[in-house]
Image (cartoon, rainbow, N blue to C red; front, side, top):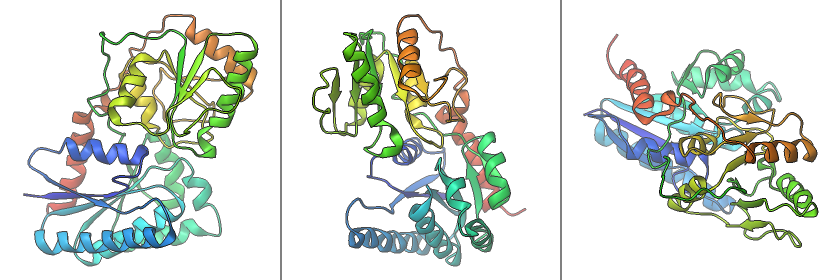
Length: 328
């Protein structure tokens, strides 16, 4: 039986972890699935140990299975990209077929520095990697840097769905993301300060932060939450906000729409479903107006998410994998 090995952040919270989790828990029929943890949150030593462990685990799998193994590496930019590239080179030397899946919304900026793209393109070519990106738009953007790409949309875990038994809280908005400057927590808090000044009853629930800023009574911080808690927050909130600086194809937006929750995103983000709303500008005033408008009306979310259904994603990946392991 052929095997796919998903390599990436298996236990570290974030969008890539969500993608790997969905793919590994909903495997392609008649394919074995293995997962390899390649990242650790913590010191340089712990990260190095995680890398070496991943390298050894990939080697063990390839030595054990021998034939029909696709090593599917999930990469962001910066050190994530470099780690996965080294692992791809190692797997290629051992006979694995390589899929290099780029998830980062910052990849173009990173590739554009210090003639980096030319070197990365050559190394990917030498390990005969098939490069995967998240959308046709990302394909247009990445191809000039790295060469030919194929598209595979992010899959939505079937657990994300509309639940009519969960009460939708009219003025509850939601921000889901790690505590990182690019996710826009501080900007969202500025928006909430303005709502509070105006005596609005809009409340923000957010993950990634352990506590709300001092003086903000309309923000509830959850830290990091389980998958089940995240689904409940999506199902009961009336709006998900994405004030991020950049994203690849944010899983939380897809998951929100699957739960029937509208999404308001930064104007700079792309590769989002058509039913996503964009703030006109990056000012707090613009976001306040957009949030107030969206909370005040009924929204039809009949967007076509078929390309993100796990069945569609698996069919697309099956075609890709078979092309790699079967003789031409």
